[in-house]
Image (cartoon, rainbow over the protein chains, first blue to last red):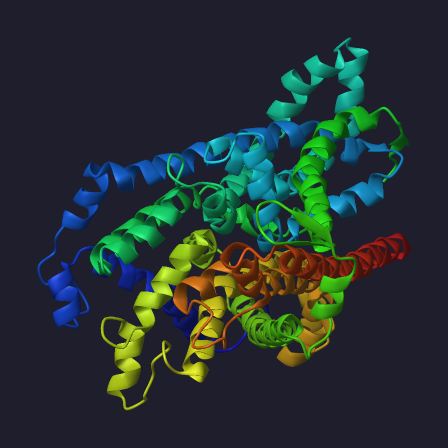
Length: 268
Length: 300
């Protein structure tokens, strides 16, 4: 009774629709440019890894990945460590303005990055962080900290309050309780929140591109600029794209049951 | 929930408050500052009062015309993708296998597009749709359709819409799937005993239970499509002409392309205001729906 007639056909068609464009990108990444432009084949006739080799050996390419990873990791660490105590507070206590604060956090998750691009540019130039991973990491806190708070709040709420009370009776101080008891209990929740902070920072382009110029240029910016200069090197572009999909594809298996929860700000 | 009142909890929330205030309020103050001034370069600013806002909200001026054109375009885009993604997402969620490894496999494939960087989503469709090297463009042209998203308005729109459907329908599907899973089996057994039709099961059991997740899905999809920038920017660059220039693209053109700080700031504030109002409406509806649900539970 769960499902509908013809469901296998519908689902298969939809999954093919999802996979086909990705397959095409992978397919092109193993072709040479001559082959891409001259023939239309469903798979590479002369598979080559030259495109990938070029990315791994050319510093202007692989440094883009390193720069992206730098700000993504800094951002994830900041977001989680700031959000954890707040999530606990929202889950356990009522305090002045708690509901308004919760809504304010949500509204920041919804704020268009385009609005913030210019003021962030001025702000981080003024404090000499422009073109460093820190600028992008702090800018992405705008939407990742609220996200982490919302997700973690759900996980903290699933821990019974009796555990807090017993720990305090046993003489645990608050910081000790937090690190020794609460954090291990919601470890999977922290993992999920970290994954989503990682992903949302990884997929964002506009702020990352605006706040960097040379030294901290993220891979997304490298992709747009190098391509126009090289006169559309399709194979290389495809290979660079495939490499950006890999971090998500690697972790996705472990968080598959939490994806809806993460995207719905922990509300499902 | 029986939460205790404790004002000291503010100390736990303070770090979050400070860092989000630093990233949200401080920049917005700059925006407000710009929005009432004019500049002739060299960092010389002049008081302009509400001049920019008047210009922005008057469709007969250049700025106002561009703003309203991009706003209607963006609203039309949001409406189209919601009309496609929500029903399609529900159908996909209803089509999910019931258990076993197939569920996991489907979840992974569904989630894949959500985790691709937005500019790469653009790149994928830019390549996929090209008539010379892309499978989609090539196939459409070889069956006799004259498809070219670079030169034709309709084709550009279709490409951007299909790309968004490809990118985000999974989100609606995953949310609905999570909602469906939370329906107890007893409901279905009762329906079976009553001899309810498939359609009756959907409208009487599944749809009401999906209310809440659908609300979240519509909120997220509306918001994200209303501030869409990267994907259409990579594929069409806002063209041909201005036909796919959405509000964010227009804003970035004005702010970072022309460095018209005052105009961009006024546009930003109005844009942000629209978002906050919509967000607040959804939040209120959502919390009310939540408390209704708890009240239901209390009765049962």
